[in-house]
Every structure is written in structure tokens, then in C-alpha cells.
Length: 169
Image (cartoon, rainbow, N blue to C red; front, side):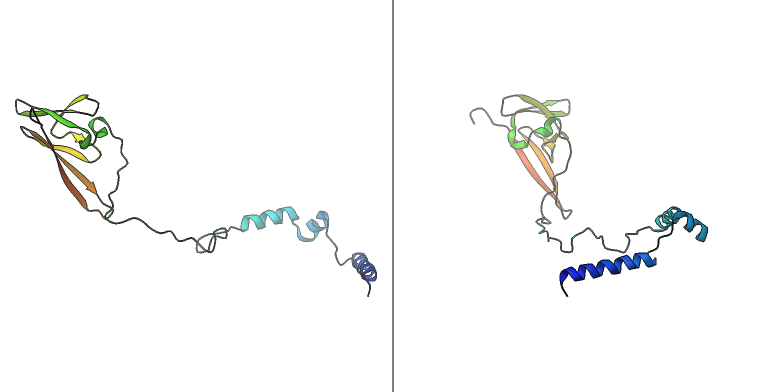
């Protein structure tokens, strides 16, 4: 059968189906008369009845294959706390130099200097650096205790000693 004859035959079959009324469409008025409901109200009922629930079903927009992420976190890694640093916390103990120790009525004070030569007075209990605290001031040194936490929840405590240099050292 040639292509031209095939197209002509298909055209005749299509027209005869339309003429026979096999593809008849009800008008909205006929539909209301036969069922008592309009097509628009039935569609809204169907829309109201359908509710897609995601629980227990996979998300159709997520990829089937997910890339594996290599975890590089070690349990002994120190966690950096996200806190705002103020005052002496802006200086790490290694950036400071002990220049003087003073005693005034049971209070021990120490004077430290930063790399620019600016002086600061500290006392016991002052926070220094991210994790340090001045734990003790003696006649010729300041002892700083640093406390850090690891991912595993372990607490690491280290001690830093700042010594007073004598004249000529």
C-alpha cells in the first residue's frame, strides 16, 4: 500500500468515526442534566480528595545514586567553639610577654606586653586566647591553663608558663 493511499484511508476512517458519534462530548448543560453535577465541580472535588503523602515513599526528585562522602573527622580532633572573643581573648599566650608582677593586698596582678609594646594588666581568672585562663600568678611567673574539647568529648588540659625575665636575660 502506498503512503498516499494509507493517509487517505486513515482520513476516511477518522471522519467516519466522528460522523458516527463515537467521540461524542457532552456539553456542560447535558452533563448537569444527566448527573446533576457540573464538570468543574467534579474536578474540584477530585482535586480536594487527592493529597500526596510523602511519608514512607521515596522522593521522586532525589537521585537514585548518592555520592559517598568521605568523613575526615577524627575523634581526637579539637572542636573550635564558635564564640565571640573579647579583651585578652584576642591574644594567644605566645603573643604576650610578661614584664612585671605586682602584689597589692592579697591581689596578685601581672603586666603583659603584646608584640607592638602595648601593656595590659591581668589577674587570676582572666581569659586569655581561645581556650586559656590565668590560673595562678606567682612572684616571677604567670600560669595559664588551656582546656580544649575533642570530638569524642574528651577534655584536654595543658599548662603554659610565662616567666618574668630578670634584668640582663
